[in-house]
Image 1 (tube, rainbow, N blue to C red):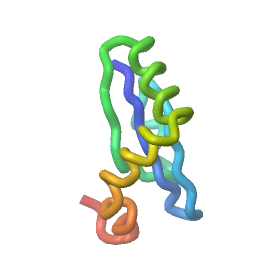
Image 2: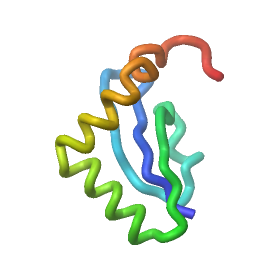
Image 3: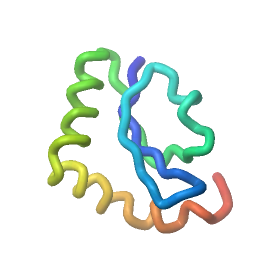
Length: 77
């Protein structure tokens, strides 16, 4: 399984979009805000590239997660 994810740093105001087969390795010191899972690695890398390089798609994703990103410093689920 491959995952495309959006992380937010718990230490600085920084977000990161990436792709990995092992999502748990990406947790520290980042917090997973959102992820999509893909069975095929090529599909996952295509989606990662879309989110990193196409401003409209990245902006749309960030706007959908606006409240989640604002409330990250609250209690963890």
